[in-house]
Each structure stands twice: as structure tokens, then as C-alpha cells.
Length: 503
Image (cartoon, rainbow, N blue to C red):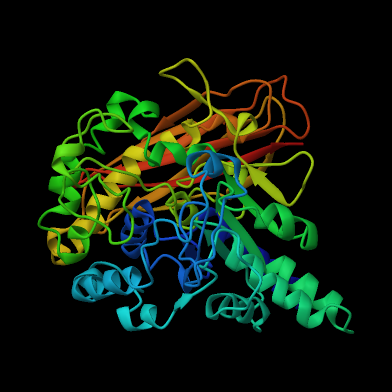
């Protein structure tokens, strides 16, 4: 009887693997820390349209080498970061500080579109819920982490709570408020009986996603005192979504960021939240930041980053930090080196707890016919922008007038072993909630794998096969992506991935 039961369970497991529906995993927990730059505001607006995709547990004002409030006592400060020191060499009492109300202002607009968003997607938190998560962290100066703040205490509390699931700590500015939370934990528990247990718990829970080093607190404190905390470090790929986008983005992609696309599909006639999205020549001006001149129609020609027209995209340099958390089927959340909408980060050879971009994370750019430091982010941008446009529609239109992404599930196990010379068959189940027709394409994500030769993917409709090379060696891996794009407007894309490992 026992053997029969085991056989039935094994059969059920195999059936589940072969006829899989998308597995609903718990939403990733996340806390966002932000210095309030205009590109943070734009990243925040987009983030709110995806607030149902992750569990937001904190929205924390923090400082950076570009933005700080000052202590109100006339104390002056000069940056210890070389880039900022060159730009702002004279001592300052404050720097381009936008205040601690802009998040709340965006949430008021979010409250107005929340009913429509909720009809188009499940799980959107209310504006009231999000408002209760807004905290002020360490904001007086760049890198200030000397004192406990409401924001640092909130992060500390979450890192010490009874939920052991990871918390993605997004650093859109400096890491100083995060560092203060960790320092407070160290000060409270170091030397006590349970310090090793606390250190292990926090180190396993905290995952820091930082866009550059925007202060020195990670280098000077976190990396030394908490070396086992995982860090995802993006210092190159984010540039394609930042101010110099026109200089790094190919022309065929720029149409998704120009004034026509942004004005028609994102900003205008999409409700009060989208009207608060900063763009070139829109007439908006952020209080406190004298360098926010992008909205001035008279300052768009030969500007710092090029010449622009009304409603052109400005920057969302921080968006990769949460794009990494959106489950579109690419399995990148637990494997940053797989690549996904937040780019591709590779494990450091010198620090196993650090994933970073740069040369080792360069993807082959077919347009340039060479490896490209930015292509791991560039390759997804058309799909990302179309998805953004669809969600902007969700803000003002009923379900039947909006497009919603296809649902894609692998027909076979996604992690599979293979042998050299073997032909492996697999496929997908794809459905569309709006009844749209779908285009299905399979391709190898070569850079995500580890092998010496490419594989050809043969496919017809939803079925595909790959012949593992005769020369393949044990340990070689091959990543195959199925890309499903619907024919709705705008066209939306979701994915499935298989990883074949040679025995």
C-alpha cells in the first residue's frame, strides 16, 4: 500500500511538471528607499502601476550624493564621492532637496486611479495602505547614518520580524538609511548570546539592489560589517533608462521613449497620476531642485543630454531595481545572472554574495555585432514600454477596453538534464485573457548559459526541440526562452524559460 501511494504521488508530481500551470509564488517583499530626484519620481509613478506584483513593506525617504536636506543648523558639507565633489566642490548646507511630501502627493493621485487599476489587475494595495508605509529616513547629509530615524527603525523592524522570506531593499539613492538600520541591529545585539542567530537571519533576509554607489555607506560599513548580505549592483545597464538614453539607445527603440509615444500612451488622458510623470517640456517644476529645468519648453534644445521635444522621456534610472521583481516568466528573481526585465547581473568572482553588471554581464548586441554592456537591459525595452502603456490604460479604462498580458506555462519541467547529442522536446501552454491571437517565438539566451557552442531551436507554434551539441561537456547549460506576444494594443509579452544542463 505504501509503495502504491508513493507511485501515485510520483505520478501526480510528474503530471504537474509536464502539464504545468504558472506556479503562484509568494510576492517578493520589498522596501524602497529614495532620494527624490525627478527620475525617482518617474520610477515611482511606473512602480505604482506594478504595485500588485510585489509586497511593498516600506517607502522611505533617504539622501544621496545628489540630494540631501541639511540639518537646519547651517552645517556645511562637501561630498566624499569623487564625481559629486567635482560637480559641487564648495561646502553646502543642503543640496537639491525635494522635501518629504512628494510620495504622499503621488499617492493621492494613485487613490483616484486605484478603482480602475483594481478592475484590471488583482492585488493592488490601497493608497491608505501605502501611505502607512511612508517613512522619513536619514536625510540630513550624504551618507549620514549616525542616528536612528523613523525610516531606519522601520527597516530594522522588518529585518527582525518573524517572516524569514527575503526582503529586497531598493536603494534608489544612497544606502545610508539601510546601513543605519543594520548598524542599529549590530549595536543592539552584538556581543549578546543570540548575535550569531540574528546576524545569520538578517544576512539571509536582506537583499540590497543598489543603482550605483550614491554614497559610501555600503563600501565603508555594510560590506565590512555584513559581508554575507547579498547585493545586486547595477552601475552600467541602468543608463539605458537614465538621462543619457538617447546616446546609448538604438534608434529603433527610441520611438518607445519619444514624445509621441509617451504623450499619447502614457502621460495625456490617462488620469491624474500619469500627468504627474515628469517629461521634457511639460511645464512641470519640482520644488527644491533648481536643476530640474527639463520641463521648461525653452530649455530642450542642445540640453545637457541632447535635444528633445515635448513629452520626451527624461529618466527612470532606478526602475531596474523593481523591474527585477516582476514575474514575467524569466525566472530571474532567484537567478540574477539569468537576465530579465531588470537586466542581467553576474556573480562576482571575488565576492560570492555580490552580483554585478559590467564586462562579465555584457550581452551580444546583433545591431552592433559585438558584446554590449547595456544590451542585457536594452533587449527587453520594447516589451517593457508596451507593458507600461497598457498599465497606463488600466488607470482610466474598464477591463474590456484594456489589454492584459498572455499567460504562459511550460508543458515540461523547466530545469532538465540532457546528454550530448540528445534532441530535447518541450513546449508551452499559452492563453490570452482578452482572447487575442498570439505570436510564439523560441530562442536561445546564449549569454545566460555556460557552453562553448550555440544551439538551434526548431519550433512550430507552441512546440519546440533543441539538439544538444555532440561536443557538449558535462556541466554545460543552455537557456531557451519562449516569448509569447499577443496581438492586442499595445502588444504585451510574457515568457517561459528552460535550462538544460548536460550530464
